[in-house]
Each structure stands twice: as C-alpha cells, then as structure tokens.
Length: 160
Image (cartoon, rainbow, N blue to C red; front, side, top):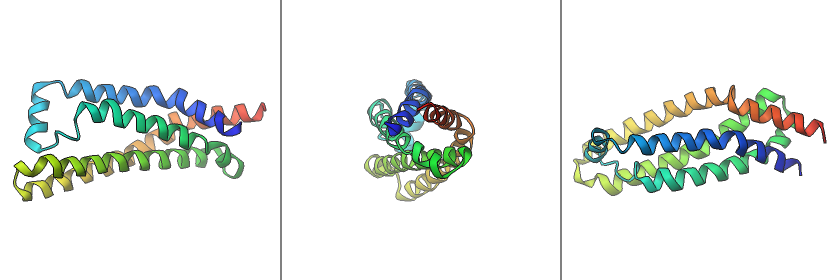
C-alpha cells in the first residue's frame, strides 16, 4: 500500500513533464533543417519517432512507477531532500542509460555512411552532451518535481 502512494504521485507529477519533453522532441524533429542535421550526422535512429513517441515515454512511465515505489522506503531512513535526490538520481541514471544505449546503437547502425573518425567524434560529443544534460537534469529535478513528489508522498504516508 505504501509503495503505491509513491508510484501514484511519481506518475501524476512526473508523467506530464516527461511526455511534454518527448512531444517537444517529436515536434522539433519535423523541421527540415533539423532533419538535415540528423541525417548528415547519422542519428536517424536516435531521433526516430518510434524512439521518442514509444520507447522513451514507455520507459519513462515504467521508471517513474518503479522508482516511485521506493520513495516510502527512502523516507523511513532518510530526510526529504536525500530521498528526493535518491529518487531523481536513480530515475535519471536509468533513463539516461537507455538514451545513451539508443544513441550508441543508432550511431553504429545508421552512421556507417560517414567516415569512422566522425563517428568517434559524434560518439564523444554525444556522450559529453548526455553527461552534461544528466547532471543538469538531476540537479534541477531534485529541487523541483522530485521534491514535490517526495513531499506529497510523505504527507500522504503521515495520514495513513
């Protein structure tokens, strides 16, 4: 019962944010200059609508539910800020790992039309970009939506 509370709030608050981001990526990929950039860099697989319209949102939903179940356990032994950080870091790490694996797979699958040296540069730049985004997203979401999720879960657990 306590696990469901964290999952419910994680999905209720986190899902609109994540789905909005996926929709924005899909909309951005419709613009011809962006499509040209994607095609010339060999990232057709990473920016494919199936990835951002299917795999990423469903992975995000599952991860919100799965990590949300753990919030009540975090709150038993840790303070609210540390609980928020643990929820965020575990969720973001798994989500960014999925993004990184899709990025690497698509780079090697669709990137063979370009020189191998440029693939290595694309992999390096993409990896650095994903790491910087991961750090930024973890810091921002720890003090925003994750803190709200954990606080609502804590309040609901007090009422039980």
